Image (cartoon, rainbow, N blue to C red; front, side):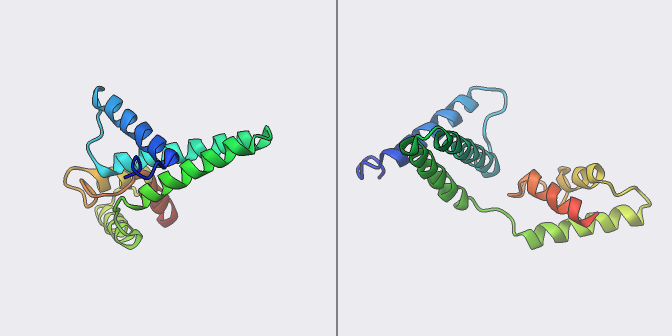
Length: 141
């Protein structure tokens, strides 16, 4: 669709993402979940925003606008990746905190995150970014 519309910015973004996922597929840790793809999209969007700022500082508004438009496209795609609601994540964290405290174990950041993402944990194989979970755990401890 981007090719037919001759939307070069969207096409460049799609080609870049496709190249990175293809390269990742050839490594020992290929992308297997939507969350990994979401991480890639957010990382590339942040890099584009940083590049846009550098171009703006160098008085290259044309390149800055191009990078910002590509970052907006990546942010748009990132919104399409379904993740768990913050309330659901918080509820799972509170359950784990309660479990740890009733067992008399220390409820620090590491132990809570470990319990959350164990293969039998409440967030195992769920569409949750670890960074988001860590931010919420930090707020609840």
